[in-house]
Image 1 (cartoon, protein in one colour):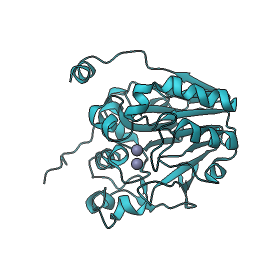
Image 2 (spheres, protein in one colour; image 1 turned 30 degrees about the vertical axis):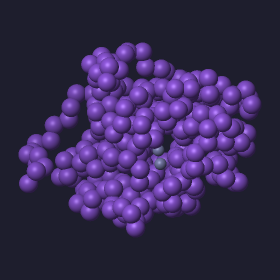
Image 3 (cartoon, helix red, strand yellow; image 1 turned 180 degrees about the vertical axis):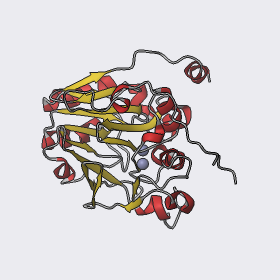
Image 4 (cartoon, protein in one colour; image 1 turned 90 degrees about the horizontal axis):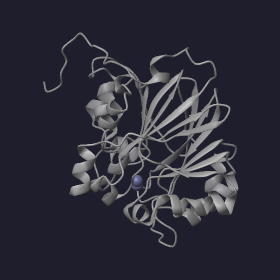
Length: 306
Ligand SMILES: [Zn+2]
Ligand SMILES: [Zn+2]
């Protein structure tokens, strides 16, 4: 068989802090690592922005959300051991959200040798639809401890965090967003890819941090996606402590996410950031932002030239 099943399993060396040294933190904290901030076909195939999704880390949590292309590689590059993941969440069946799901499941299940972890994804991802097959093979769905089919309103737990699937209106009709209710630091919302619709904000009321997939720039709407104007309506309704725009498409990248996102902050009064690759948000009593400083050579040089 093609899979490396040779024991013993050995843990790679760890370099990141909260994940590897639980109990050392004095104040409870949830850390979000943006392993990608790009979205849509051309941002993905050119990797103008990475598309690895978001890692959630706390003392009781290690979870990967929307593992697009790059999730495994950038996870390892960031010193985040994918074998420690407890759950893989996929919001819908588009490649910028699911392509690394299977390999992260292999990491989570220690090379498919250990029944371990949770996979949560909508019907289209688990079973396919009229147009597509499943995005996660039956083989990969057999080894995790639990596979949860999510649709809006479905509630499940990963560690001590309660998670509610929320409604998204997107070209994958099964797409969902998520609301994460952490006991440590309160609630975090993630819209995933959705267009604006009346009541979209309701599911995120009371969250401290709202992550919005704002793929298109201002004045450039696209079916199933958000522009800053749409994000403004949601942020106005939700009034989180902080909003973060991510999942930038090519037009958004060329327009300049920082400039685009400024509009949201100005109109709503809510501190709003444009996410950047490698950015970490540390959510404790306050929400602290750490931007990645180190420029990656090699791959990035290659991508710039090509
Ligand atoms: Zn997307
Ligand atoms: Zn999508």
